[in-house]
Image (cartoon, rainbow, N blue to C red; front, side, top):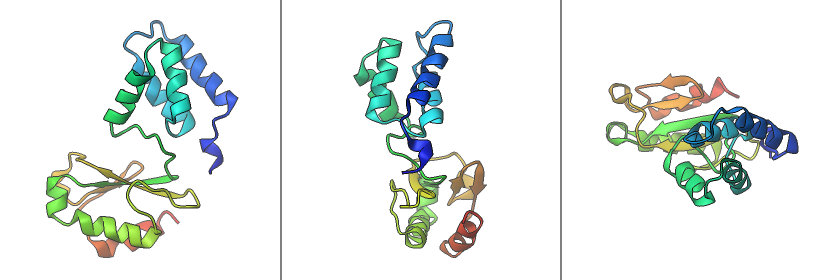
Length: 159
């Protein structure tokens, strides 16, 4: 597991300091979860319990928010998270072939992270770029009108 995914005491302290600095914690669950995911890289059960205790809300409420929003993840992601849109427009225009091409090149499936921690593949419902379908994002970069043949060249930029 990559070092940035360690659940160290320093990271818990950083999160606690962030929460303690909030003027009021009421209604701040999503903001706190964003910060927690930024610190830890993902939101495992231990971190969710910590957030629930600090915000004085139930762990079930925290889990409900984490599992509802696709931005949050309970599993560590790779250094380069490949998000493939599987919404209707992208799917109709070949998103499944794009998923297969990334899976073949990286040896992992959707929801998995490569053993070296460099890549992960995430399937999303829609990213709102239907005119560019099929669409993939890697970090802040968006790739549109993809074909399976383009996948190898795209990955070369990140290896």
